Length: 462
Ligand code: HEM
Image (cartoon, rainbow, N blue to C red):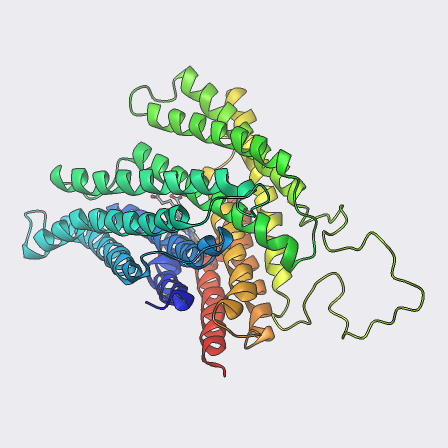
């Protein structure tokens, strides 16, 4: 496969999954929740299938596609063993499709014909192999990245990858562990004749994917790219490692607390571990946002000249947009990135509040869905929208995004989806809360559709 276009099928697969099992299922389950339809096992099965498709398919494939293109270049080399990329993509996409179809199907069949049928047997086989296929795909991707890094020339002290290496290592290790756990759970659940993952392990898997894989790699890509795209200062290298250490410590504490639940439900030690972990994670997120400086722009941009130009200097280049190095050819992509980081800061504050609530003995202070969807819809999805708009045209040799107006539409639909998904959880009984919640999935779907149409037109332009 052509190394320069390796990312494109990953991006289009991520969009296709988002528009079906990701935001498509989301629109159904959230409407069912808001309007109190019959929430049986089918609903929980669809929730798990939706979470899986969003994390492995929408965010996962998007990040892996961008990673295969960008990370070898960041290391000063090209992608090794690029011929494995289509195999990896096929394995992961087939795995996600099998899981998205078989999990709800099994739950429907169980409710309607408990004796079992040929369809149930097919569903079970699909469910069991889905996790194994995804694991194989993930291992191929990690092989490609690690081989590329090992074939590269030795690192110099100023190599651009150095400050973000621990973030990338955290992400890759978490991805492998999550893919292993997911494969083990699909096989074990099938062998035990069930169709749902046990909730504590399901929560731990979700946490590992969001906090262990997606956030650290999103942080690494932000550290390297946002100062260039948004004319910011580079975050100080010496701060990045301590932030990661406290973040990972918080994540491990929270994971331990989640895994302890099956053995001693909410034991005092689990409450303490979970509370401290949430505060550490949330605190590290807030310090990271502060250091990246996307929201407040306190620091002098890296590009600012420290010596004033001579008195007779005449600027002959066309001026760029105020505060940005572009001429508007990527639309208002910065609105997507700024709002993503505002959502992340909010989620960090929610994690701290959750931790304080736990330690003070009130674990149910906040619905955990507030933090989860502030991060997944608010931060991850809006950041993907912003990065896709700004980076992908260049990756594919294009100099502009096809439609700046669609970028604005993505911004409005995406932020409304996040707001309507999260805000009603604070006050579910006020007027309009259910209507807002119930429409959030459809709004998210529209936001992805706007991005997909824009990227499709961009890739086809001459
Ligand atoms: C506006 C769009 C979205 C809507 C309407 C939506 C809706 C839902 C609903 C109703 C639940 C069940 C909550 C509960 O148990 O009370 C859920 C769970 C979940 N969602 Fe979303 N979601 C959206 C976007 C996303 C995105 C973008 C991601 C990830 C990138 C995501 C990841 C998850 C995960 C991991 C779970 C938990 C699944 C599990 O329990 O196994 N969601 N979502």
